[in-house]
Image 1 (cartoon, helix red, strand yellow):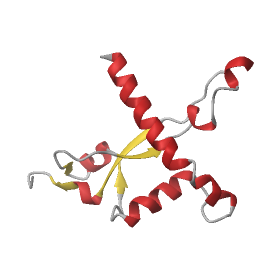
Image 2 (cartoon, rainbow, N blue to C red; image 1 turned 60 degrees about the vertical axis):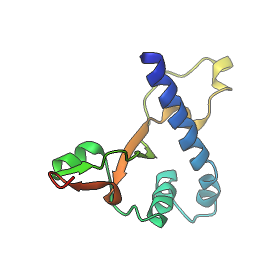
Image 3 (tube, one colour; image 1 turned 90 degrees about the vertical axis):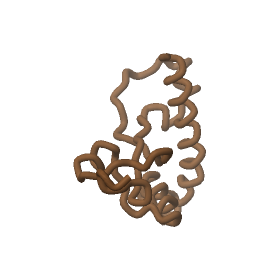
Image 4 (cartoon, one colour; image 1 turned 120 degrees about the vertical axis):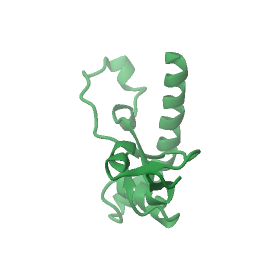
Length: 114
């Protein structure tokens, strides 16, 4: 089961990296300040205006509709020990950022409304 979870996480991380890399240019051009800001703009263009974690929506009395897939953002970076030099060359900046799963206003309903 652990290998399946790690595989899914690696899949989501790769998906998020793919979305994030083109946004680096927008940061360099001063159009956005962070990768997450760019990701949120992409989601907003699809009608996802309010993003919260599952826990946050539940605290507001909302539940995620069955079958909805989480949207991806980068979480707060983890503190890790400095990798050995031979490993450090294989890592990129996103390897230290956890994946944050969020849902939008389009993906939730009031509890009991199903």
